[in-house]
Length: 472
Ligand code: ASP
Image (cartoon, helix red, strand yellow):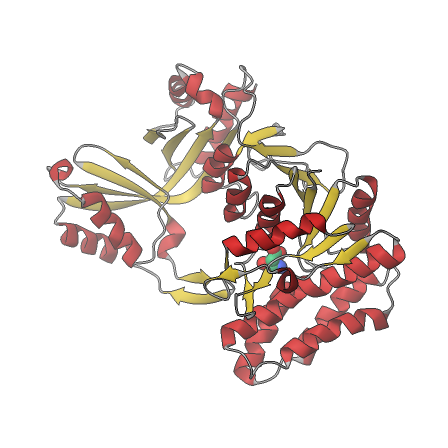
């Protein structure tokens, strides 16, 4: 039998009622075999448990003591969720003792291994208590399985672990576990048994890796929304819900503004051809959105989604005979890399190239390494432009601000002649000037750059008129 892996994030785990609903789902369908949990998210008035653990472990490392008030908040979070479910304060405290033990191991571990141990405790404590609830209160055949015991081995940086082949082999054994497996996301161990974390939001990855390892039938991801909408509902009035969307379409859309789930989490399931079903925990009977490798294309819907992003810059470099210069593009991009500036898109002409960059990339920014943060200082646009022009010996290099980028996506676009013309016409009819237009080589997306210096809503307007053209 191929099983279902179901993942519950911080929101789903932040109230007794939701945790109960999740248990109902396991009771109602025996195919649901593995419950992968995040730590408790925001309980009214309290920060997320993971954020509290990060703050506490940093203080422990810098000041020598994990603050009592942070521990108390974590305790309150767990009481708020599990007491109404019938677990006593004593029982909850017994489980929270795990955190006390981890906190005390500061001098045995390197700072990053210590962070990984303490921060991952949020997932462990929740999952241990959840397993007790399922077993003792709900009388379900459920057990907590620990990533360190099953051999969930990650390699790399302790705060940004990557799955190993060995882990896949070991995780496949979950198929043979008796009953429901309650499994904590986010943390694991390296081959020496030292604590490891995936990067932030890593429970999506834990669930994806388990799904691939056990060759699950479906990877369910339970959320507080009905599924994925074809446009941002703050811009388009009641946009259509997607019932099916391909991994590649989601990638194109996430790249601009759709935050569906951890990007890296899609890879293992996509490779293993396992669909992801995004579902609403509050409406379990609605179908949600299926993310699949291949989908049926409705002839009247060549476009599946429209994303957009504002506050973008277009950096335009011109150099005569650029096309003859081998390695020019790489050289240009290396200058962005050198300054830790993430770019979104490149379009090229024969002697010119345009790079799309979010404006905020020039502001001071934190550079994430797992749960740790570093800082990159603000970059002055004029200084950077002068530096690039000089280094590349370019004829010109200018950075234009106040742009928006609109991304029109759909597998059906490939087979649809005249689609770009429709996009261009509807924008022209509505007096919106396209500064950049680029069709990806996969013919799955068209990217349009719009100027917002006169009309700050030009990007939103473009989304609306394109939406009306293809969905109404
Ligand atoms: N609790 C972790 C975080 O907040 C992992 C997760 O929720 O996926 O990043």
